[in-house]
Length: 430
Image (tube, one colour):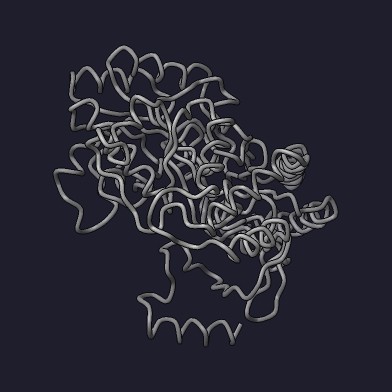
């Protein structure tokens, strides 16, 4: 670990805190060196089976050859032009329209944060309203519109909780916060702000806080309420889109929003994202000559990202990726639950498809408030114990874990054996 400490010290001299996103500073402080398939190697030459998957984008595997080879070929003739649209950009948008139920037209961005920003801006443009509704615990990026009430302290749940210094009060106070899985709360908030709400933005599965599943009728209820009150419904599928199927979670649940934001697994970890939705809304962007909601970006549609999307989607379309990662996800969920029960640990394992999250509580998990019952210290002890066993589950409480296509059944078997060792030790200490 000495080499990692030296590297972090070097990094801290030239970058504030030494890392380039706030959740990358962890304990133990791992410093990545390389990744291949389902494994990552740190600068100390320690290898880990990777269930972190960089917070979810890595759906196939690290340095996946079919993706990297296609990108390399593309870059022999394309990079960045700054005019018109390339064949790759067009094909990417055609693929998204083909697969995502809400997508009639698409614009490419560079990150999920950019996509949610644009989705909210165009919602305000088309409705002429200022306010939006988000949900406690959901994360939609770092901009002022949405960076509030993400991981709130207990006393600030549902109250005014800006996520950063320097945010504009007007932006913070134009964002209303509701309780996830509580339609009554949403309806009351809409009525209290009659004809003022432009959009409701929601993670259809709030993966920022692990995996809190929507109760039956909740997403359908949001769709009905937004239609009744002329509100734009935005599904933030930056995490769920393409990880939970080619059509995203909206296809799985049968609810079609007005706008959708996509990213992460769409390109197996390469930096590209998208905003898509109904043509009548998307045409408000200034990429359309008659639009009035500004949309611009020098690097939008760069060949690296578009090639990555095309290569990734080709694999998702033609190979049994979802069968494989869903099967391994189910094995991990049931396996960890059985191990916890055997060792007398109060754990509830939640998840969907390729995602699994062990919550250290026996209580139900239906909204952010329920997470206050989780034993955070035990959660961290488990994750750090797994790292000692050569399994990377990011040592941040209640964060989701992911299976990927490169992961094998033997990797899962080893991981469950490691979980048995860690939980058995935790059970003896309890």
